[in-house]
Image (cartoon, rainbow over all chains, first blue to last red; front, side, top):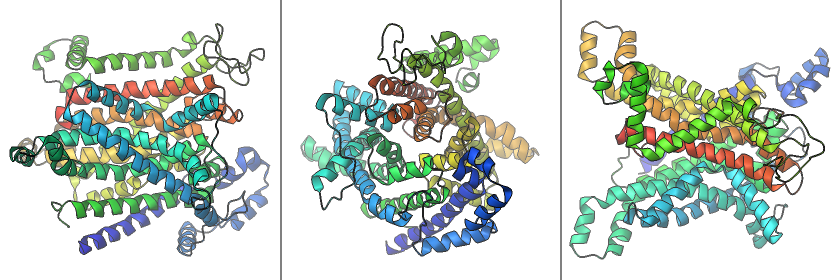
Length: 318
Length: 300
């Protein structure tokens, strides 16, 4: 087991190196002048060639690419994520201040997706093609098609119209003001949670339908266990293993999805910072945030893999 | 046309092409009537997108300053936006951007990925090893984040958005087609062709590629819906197709930027258009998958 964890970590580290190269290539090497990105095409044409030269040197963009890459890696290793062109707060401080809100949204949405998805899937799988099953399948197909940010905008509008309610805009910590914090995160968490629940329900339903047909379930029934115990003790734990894996993959859906969803709700989380970086064409901030998101995604997937290996003795640790 | 090639009805071969297509479609409709219905919805959306200039009641960019931010009425049945543009017209034109990007990106990305997977599965060895690592690196990013970064780095434009979304589709095509090729290349008929002296290129093109068409079609159709949602999200975040061209994502972003409380009709209709389109293409894709390859049910 320990060897397996070490192996996964080593592969994870390799992936992170690869990811850093992809991020660097996308943000620095792809065609597209960074000065155009920063100043806009109109502002760029107003710059004299010397000014362009100076800006490029000041930003370290005149160095050879490998040197730029090296500087970037060293900065990140030192925990220096640099500054935005437009804000006084350093990127590291932004991450520390806003990251927790997005993390809370992600956690709550995963919890919600399980709380909603698994019971619905059980009801669905116990009576395939019944009315309950059909309704559940209709909603899961529907929620796969609804863009989360639109759903979020509708929720914001509806709560304004009917209850005159608007969630607070300022970020507050879970520890100083739990109620205010809850009001901020609940909207995005519900939207992202239902989006994931659609996938979870689908997967859990088909997985449960498969497991129910297996011999050990028949044995459990034959020895006289009640239907409920067969499902909760024998079928469900086995059926949920692929759902855990899916839940890990869906974390990418949550991390990315929280960007437009936080924008729709006006949530002061990391997704909103990402949105600001994109709309301000702030390439350095963007570069670091994209890298951060990818690293978090890779690490979460390692954790999920280890959990699966720990839960499922059939997996060989190779 | 590809459907008729992969259908299991050899009797179709002797008839003319239109007859074969019609027969294949009829076969599909009987096998899965629900998907056929959504296929018709999807086709309608495609027709609306193509025929937008003739169907739309107004000009998408023309402002009517006497009717600004008007709720839906008899003249503007979906209302107007802050500068008096007709929402129905813009939703209709929005379908063009959405479908163009979705089809372009899926075609480009899935094809690139599929060909890459074909080569990497066929040749194996070091090329395969490196390809697998690169695909892993690409998959380490959540789709939308990678697409955002690429779209932003390349600068705004329709082509940019297509490329950005296409790149996020490459790993899927690469992985699945590679797996198909790996299982195929050990089969006896491939060995036989090799024994007869067929070159690598001929083996790939004549013996392996045809077997990849069904999984390719399934992949492409199931990814259309995702591509539409990513396109809308990019537009919403301001890195999609730049205004004034109306896209559903741009329209929702405009609505949000219009003030503290966006008018409901500016929010409801573009989003409903996205949902309906994605729903239609997803369900059509499910049907195509079930008919072409029932074994893949739930796998993709």
